[in-house]
Amino acid sequence: MRLNAVIAGDALGPPLVLLHGLFGQAANFGRVQRALARAHRVIALDLRNHGGSPHAQSMTYPDLADDVLETLACLDASPAALLGHSMGGKVAMAAALRAPKSVARLLVADIAPRPYRPAFRAFAAAMEAIDLTPGLTRASAAAALADAVPDAAVRGFLLQNLRFDGQPSWQIGLPEITAALPDIEGWPDLLAAYTGPSLFVAGERSDYIAAADRPAIRALFPDARFVTLKQAGHWLHADNPDGFTAVVSAFMAHPAPPPCPDAA
Image (tube, rainbow, N blue to C red):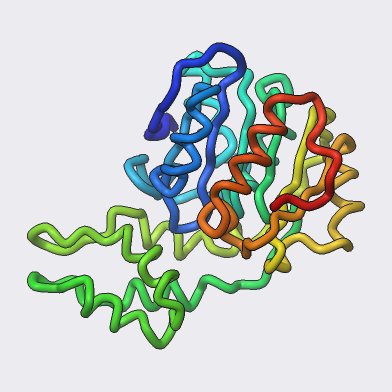
């Protein structure tokens, strides 16, 4: 499947590809993409069932990774550096493991190659329960999500996917995503290793990457390095965009990531 792409910058060298998380879209990287485009050709992709990309039933990580690899081949953007956040980080890891020659380097933002608890099922159920009738307002949609999604910022993040022109509708493939949540929460057995430069960036206020995850990460990514981004939770590129951009820029500029284990 060819994915919708938002491209910025025209610098020479390996392209930098940005992969968003669950319920996200390429536009979520807007500020970071604009900053990185000063030195790189930066391609932000909408993964299948998200943003402007086509919908499909399967959302296994091999399928999602193959979408990315196919799209980059169509854009003459391979090999590329892959940067993925959360679900997008798992997609990036799967792509690197399936086609290592197509991945120049790998940056994984706040996720590890393992299954996670089903934290988003209540969100999906609340989104599906919104009555999509004419006259629906953003305020009333937000109120309908309030019990399941108490954080106003997260509600706003989810509602970026709801279109209010005429008949309200979800731009994302919400039924397909809901059905695929067990695959999205999980991690496939990929019996391979990616030996290229790899950086795993954890949010200081997040528990998505634990010290106990490092052996499993290094088994698949033996050159993996680790950085903790200060003043950031799970959505590190939104919580600390300048710090995140600095980490990415340093990783792209050098064979190995910065030696300091923490980033301001």
